[in-house]
Amino acid sequence: MAKLSVTEPLIQPGCQIIDTTFGAYCEVGTGSRVLHSTFQDYAYCDRMADIANTTLGKFANIAAMARIGPTDHPMGNASLHHFLYRSADYWDDAPDDADFFAQRLSRRTVIGPDTWLGHGAIVKPEVTIGAGAIVASGAVVTKDVAPYMIVAGVPAQPLRERFPRSVCDRLVALAWWDWTHDALRAALTDFRTLPAEAFLEKYHG
Image (cartoon, rainbow, N blue to C red):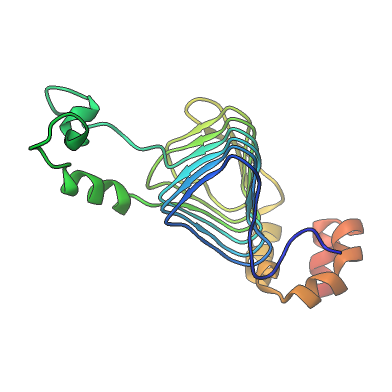
């Protein structure tokens, strides 16, 4: 029997999941925290990932201990501390700062389809990672990443494209991540055995 389900995400033990929706065949690794986010079909994260205010595209691959959309403190104020916006934790007569939390929620991070974020990678709020891109382990991504680009470092910088640009463009146009589950199964052997260009020749012409 298949491990993953079309109807229910596989949530491993010790996770905190708040205000998050899941597509088909999704998984959340042990001890992960996921807040105000969306996992599209087949997206998953490994153990101890921390994801906030993010859309994970179809087939997104998130390694252990990655952090996506880490929230910021109010750097322009006299203090950075929680008491500014989590005020109700400190005083009975001071409400939390609803505007601050609304502004946080609005700063969405978008992880494109079939992306791979390496172990311990960090992607800042309001960054978009393009389809098929790879973020190296330990990288800190502060700017958008083009489709099929490999980035590394602190802050992350482009290293190289995974394929020639013409191949990258054709893969984006093919958008195999939108295929049905049955179509993916039918093409599984070709996904496993054909290099990207040969796969495109067969399925994209």
